[in-house]
Length: 541
Image 1 (tube, rainbow, N blue to C red):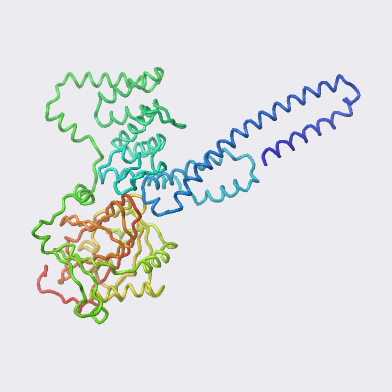
Image 2 (spheres, rainbow, N blue to C red; image 1 turned 180 degrees about the horizontal axis):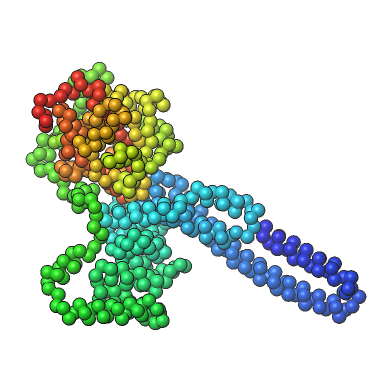
C-alpha cells in the first residue's frame, strides 16, 4: 500500500513537472533536453530502489516480529491459564503490550489507511499501561523474596512447580532484567535494583544481545545502588569498570573521586567487628511494615509449621453427614481435619468441575480489583497488599449459585440467608492477600453496620483450581498452612461462641508462584445463628 502511494506520488510529481514546464521547454524537440531527462529518471530510479530497500528491510523486521509473536501466541492460546500461570510470562505480556507493540506501531506507521494500523490503534486503547507493567515487575520481585528465588532461576523461567521442559518464551532477556531493575530503582529499592542489574550485566557478558541497553548504563545504575547500600568498595569496582568502557563518562568520573575519598576516610577509622556485622545485616531487601513478614513468608514456603507430630496424630479424616442430615445420610461427604485449635476442616469433592466452570463463567465478566474495608473510614478501597480481582454472585443469578449456598448451609448447619453473597476471586501474577482478619475487631465497630447482620461468625473458602506452586492459605498466629486443592472447601469459625473474635484466625493468601488460583468464599454472619450455634458462658468457649 505504501509502495503504491509512493509510485503515485512520483508519477504525479513527474506529470505535473512535465506539464508545467512544457510551455517553456518542449523536451521532445531537443535531444539535448531529453538527455537531461534520462539523468532525472536515473535519479528517480535510484531513489525508488533506496525506498524499496528500506521497505524490504522494514518488512523483514515486521515479519520477524510476526513470526515470533505467531509462535508465542500459538503456544499461549493452547492453555491460556496455564501459560499465564507462570509469572514470567505474565510480566512479559504486560511489557509486550504496553511497550513493544508501540514500537511495532511506529515501525509500520506509514499508511494510516492500512487496516492493520487502524485495528492496532483501536486495540491499543485496551492494552496494559505503565502501571500494569510496573505492577507485574513488583509481583516478580515479591515472588523472589517470598520463595527465596535467585534472579537466575526467574530469568530462565525454571520456577518450582513449572514444567520441566521450560519454554524459551518464559525466559527473561537482558532488556527484561534491566526493566525490572529500573522499576526497583524508581521505588528507591536499591536491593532489588542491584540484583536485577547484576543479572542483566551477566547475560550481556555471556553474549546475549540487547537493542536498548549497554553495559555502561547498567554499571551506572549498579554503582549507585550498591553505594546506597553502604558498599563503597563494590561501588568503586563497578565505577572503574564503567570508566574502562567509557573513560569520558562525566558522572562516573565524579563518582570515582567521591567514592575513593569516602573509602579512604572510612579506612582511617578502624571499623569494629560489631559495626561490620551490623552493616552486613542491614544490607538487604528494604524494611517491611508488616511485623509478621518473616513468619508469613516461611509458612508460604511450607516452613515453620506449628504443629507437633503428636498433635498431628490426633487429626482424622471421616465420612460426615452433619448429624444425619437427610441429604447426606446415604452419601456422606469426606471431611478432613486440617487444624485442631482453632478447628479448621476441609471438605473433599464438594463441588463438581461443571459447577466450578459455571461459577467462573458467571464471574469473569464482572471481575474487578478486590477492595478492603478501611478501618478508619469504613469505606472500601484497593490496597497494595491485596492483589486479586473479585466478583459477587447472588443466589438468584443462577441455580448453581443457589445450590452451593444450600450445600454450605446443610454442611455447616448455619443459616446462610444473612450471609454475604458468594465472592469469587481470581489472583493475578504474584497474587496475594497479606495477613488479615475476616471478622470486625473492637476498634472497627462499624465494619459491617450497613449489612445489619452482625459480625462474620465463620468463613467458607472454596478452592476452584489447583495451583502448581504457592498460593497457600496460611494462619500466621498458629503456624498453619492449607494448600489449594480443586473442588475442596475449608471452613472455620472467626468468633468464639461468646461472640468475641478469635485472633488465632489471622490468615493470608500466599503469592501464587506458578499457576492460576481461583477461589470463592462465603462469609457467614451472626444473625440467624442464635439457635444454631448457641452463645457460650465464657469469653473463650
